[in-house]
Length: 336
Ligand code: FES
Ligand SMILES: [Fe+2]
Image 1 (cartoon, protein in one colour):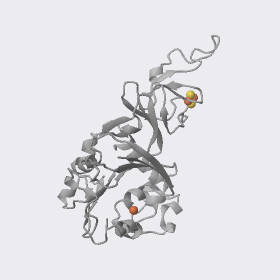
Image 2 (cartoon, rainbow, N blue to C red; image 1 turned 90 degrees about the vertical axis):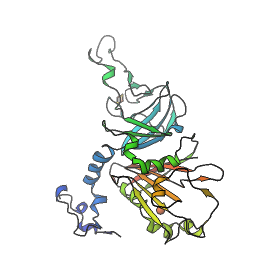
Image 3 (cartoon, helix red, strand yellow; image 1 turned 180 degrees about the horizontal axis):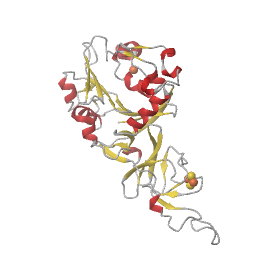
């Protein structure tokens, strides 16, 4: 179990402290508060993790079923748009105008031919390419942009895309390994047992705003200690009982994790069936339930199991951060 140091000891209370002077406590299991509260830590994490060599879940393809469909999303605190062009290809680009950086798209989800920035009406197509600029040649022969202004030099900042079984990930990093290599075989198997390629149907979206550092939610998923105490439905329905077998499987680099737990004796026996492939759970001989956290910001929750009706329920979530790094809005999409 971790202890946290009191705030008076933390760098948050001493902003003049250099970040390189921050000291981890002698007890490595003790977590200092500044890990969660220091703005400089947050900014470094944002730059190196979210904008670094990671794949970030951004949308489901089912949220963009037709050409022209788009949805707003985030990588860390960077607002982005995921859009399907007229040829059916999916693109992701920053929701920041190439002119003066305005966040030009304010609608959560919709369908369009063009994105027009409201500030000076620079206009972009569904791939993020700049297609028109007002007063480019000036007015009555006066003013306008320089002769050598090139539309294609002002594309919205594009993101790299990886899609697997209807789930879309994006990365700002230009030299990313494949999504499959990034997840590794164990976590990929867990991912595929939920998103197995069947068509997804959007059941709804819910969002929460939580005053918390982004790491807390990821850590919470690896905390079975609270589960049977806080979530009483788990014990009420015999789904997860203290003392039953539990394991956390990780990928080789320890970035992602799957929490597996065996159904306790006396728990419900007939509501679910084991997924066809789940080697991560087979390896630790825990055949029943799992939820996964994919670094840096995705959770896949719900039973990785097919119910008797043949439906698979699942949800993908992504935290969306405030610039201050201490609160996050939580958006999740349910599908079956
Ligand atoms: S900031 Fe978008 S057109 Fe000027
Ligand atoms: Fe919980």
